[in-house]
Image (cartoon, rainbow, N blue to C red; front, side, top):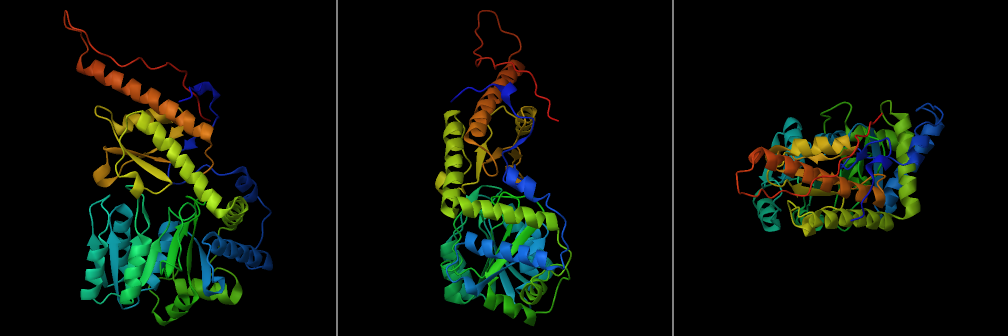
Length: 404
C-alpha cells in the first residue's frame, strides 16, 4: 500500500458512501446554467434529452417501446409512484431481504390493501423456488424487489425473478435506486415492467431527482387505475410527458441540467466502460481492506460493485471509527438495523480517484491501529511486574486537517 501524507488532502470531504457522492466539475457548471421556464420549449428539449439518454443508459434495444418519466423527489418518491400507481385493486408481492425491501413493503401497505410479503433475514439471498411456489398458490398481479439491497450490499437476482414473473403473468417492478448506473439491468431480457432510480447515487449527480423507466404499454394501462396520490401519480407523469413533454408539477430545473450532464458524461465514457471502472474501484478497495485483515459481511460474488459492507474488528466502535475517519475528511456509513454496531460500509461511486482510494486505505489502517492501541491500553493500563504487554505498532501522528 502506498503511504500518503494527510496534509496533501484536499479541503473537501471524500464521500465513500452509496450516495450522495462527490460530483464532477462538469455537473457543478451545469447546475449553474442560466434560468429557464419549465413551461417553455427550452425545458421540453431538456426533458427530452434526459429521457433519450436514460433509455441509452439502460441499453434498451427496442427503444420505441419504452418511456422515462423524471420526478422531483428522492428515489423513494419514484418507488412510491410505482407502488401507488401500478397495482390498482390487485395484489402485490414484496420480496424483502433488507432495509429497502422493508421500505417497499411499508409503502405498499399504505396504498395497496392486498400486499403480500416474502421476507428473508437481512443479507440472506432469496430462494427462487420459494418465490415460484408462492406465485403458483396465490393470485399475485405485481411483484416488487430491490435490485441492490444497500443495507448489506447484496445484489438480488433480476433474471431469475423476472422469468418466474413472466411464467405466472405477474408484472415485475424493480427498485434500482442504488444500482442503476453501475450494474447491467436488462429490462427486456429480465421481463421488467418498471424500474426506479435516483440521480444521486451511481449516476453521480446531485440528490433531489428520481425517475421511472417502463414499457409504454404498461404506462398506458395506468390510467385505468384510480389515483391514490396526487403528486406521485405515475399516470399523470406519463400523460404530461406524452402530450406536453413536461412534468405535471414545477420541477427543480437546475437539477435537471445536472442530471442531463451526468448522463452525457456516462454515455461519452461508454456505459460498459463506466461499469468496469466502478467495479475496478471496488476491487481495489476490497483487496486493500482484505490486506488489513478485515472481513466482509457477504460473499464477494453476491456484492454490488458500488459498496462493500465490512465487519467491525473486535474492540473497535463503529462510531469511533467513523468519527476518526471524518477528522481526516473521509465519510463512511455505519450499519443500520440488525447490523448497527457490527459493520461499516464503504462506497466507491462518484468522483473518487485511485489516489483517493489509496488515501482512504492508508487512513483506515492508521485509524484501526490507533483504536486498537487505545483499546489495549484500556484493558491493561498498567504492566504487571515481569510481564510484557504486546502492543500494535504506534500510529503515525498527524496534524488534524481543518475542513472549511
